[in-house]
Amino acid sequence: MSTFMQKPAEVERKWYLIDAAGKPLGRTATQIAVLLRGKHKTTFTPHVDNGDYVVVINCSKAVLTGKKLEQKMYRRHSGWPGGLKETGYATIMEKNPEKAMMLAVKGMLPNNKIGRKSLTRLRAFAGEKHDNEAQKPEKYEG
Image (cartoon, rainbow, N blue to C red; front, side, top):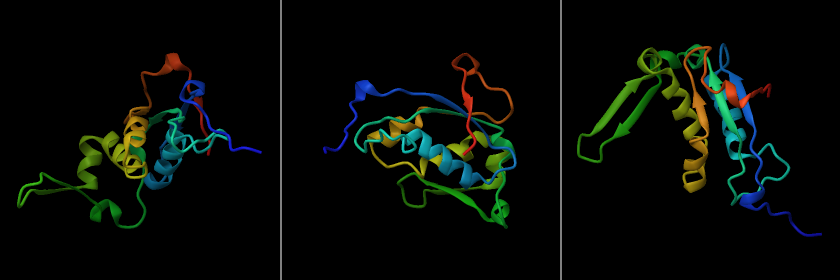
């Protein structure tokens, strides 16, 4: 018996819809990362990008447990001395709630070409409405 290796031309992608309202940010992000990577499929091959498209709605209603709302910080560095910039989670949720979900998922994907390509298939929206109705995403209950 030989190991199955999927070819990039054989990949079939589906569209999934995930509602983040009232769910913990990290738990939702792990579900999204698994779908984007394709690990839920029986045809998963590590060196082939065989993940699906994911549409996330209600990112602004995702919750954090404990005191993370006040204590969680997002950090970025310009590369220059003294170039560290910090932004609190509460600030990001006010201004751009989709970014918090994107950053959480990005940290769960591999840091290589496949991970960067997978992140392009994530569509995050702050509210109920999304502009991917034409793709007919099916609701994912994971």
